[in-house]
Structure formats: C-alpha cells, structure tokens
Length: 272
Image 1 (cartoon, rainbow, N blue to C red):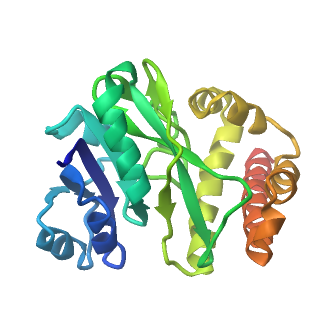
Image 2: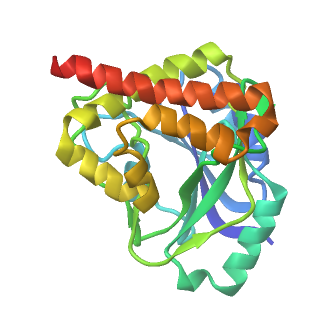
C-alpha cells in the first residue's frame, strides 16, 4: 500500500538529482514537483517518472515557495512531506512513516526528521546533526512572514527557520539523506548568500525575534551567543564527536563556523 502522504519536491535546475530523489519516494501515494523555472532537463526527467509538475514563479512577495505550495496546491492527502531535490528518503524512514500513519498520526500536527548530511562527498556520522520540520499536517502548520524581502541571500525560499506548528510535534528517529553532489565551491557560494540573509537578521531585531521563535528554544539561545562561530566549532567537532569523522568532521565544523563568522562581519559592515 502507498503511504497516504503527498511528497513535494522543490527544484530549480536539478537534472542531476531529480531522478534519484523521485525514486526514493516511490512508496508515497502522491509526488508533486514544484519547480522554479528550471532551464535544464529537470522537467522532462520528472515527467518521465509520472509525477505531477507545478511551475512556480516568485512575485517578490510573501508567501514564499513553501507556504505558497501549501496555499495553492490541492493535495490528495492531509499530510505533506517537503523534500529538496538533493535529498533521499530512506527505506527505514518510509517504514517509520507507515507505522506513524497507521497508529497515531491524528495525535500530531507535524513531524521533525533528522538529516544524514554529506559534506564534500563524505557522510558525516557525528557532529552537529540538523533536524527539519518537513512532515506537515494541512491546516496546522504555517511559515511566518519575516521582514526580509529586502535582504540579499534567500530570495524565493523561506530562510533557515522551521514552520510554526499548532499542536504536537512528532520526532522521528530515521533519517533523510542530504547529498547535493556539488563541489565545495558551490557550497561556499551558497553559504555566502545565506550569510547575507543572517546578517540582515542581525541588523533587524524584530525579524530576528520571529526567526528565533521559529527555530526552537535551544537554537534561539545559540543564535544570541556573541562568539557563535567558536561555540559552533566546539559543539560540532568536540562535544558532538565530530573529530571521529576525521578530516571531513573538521572541514564541516570549520566551514559552518566560517559561515557564522561571515554573517557577523557582514552585519557589522552594514552598521558602520
């Protein structure tokens, strides 16, 4: 039996990832690709795998892409799973989702799923492990509007914060695999843009408060630390045993610390 969950895949020029992503979702009863005007072969490859395809063109205002999808797409199911094209849903997670849907899904409004993260082609077993609230029950979850339309960096996508949930949050144990196959230079360029958005938040307290409230209690505290780059490196590489991943663990902890440092430098430059 297919899972009564609609999987929504977000794409923009993802011809190198889209097929593997969709194949990992074959147990879901509905798969919808929401595409941002791709100029490569993404659309043809997706349609060849018999999925629904929605063209998205951002108008420069809210709602952004994820909330727009919740507002404008008619889904077959009450539960939605958001997936990026460079992510794969594991078989173990599919089985955990199946048990959840059969037994106690009515008790929850959303689900938080941990991520298996690859950095520069190496799977990280330790260090900071991100979690994302990507399993959403229609009508119970929404993304807050942040005063960031003039901020560089994020554009059509909601920033690095979780949606707000009206109700209980289920914490899953099995994971989504994230491996974008991009060279490290692409990762760095992307995080320069993210740092510009983070810098905007540091310069605008009201926007930062909204984002912090959507990140959760511990994440909100971390984002207020004055030495956030150093604290992150210590947390990921030492406290969370990132050193057991060897050079990859060091590179990841250092690169993320650099990203946090860069956002603070950009923010200070904007104030000068």
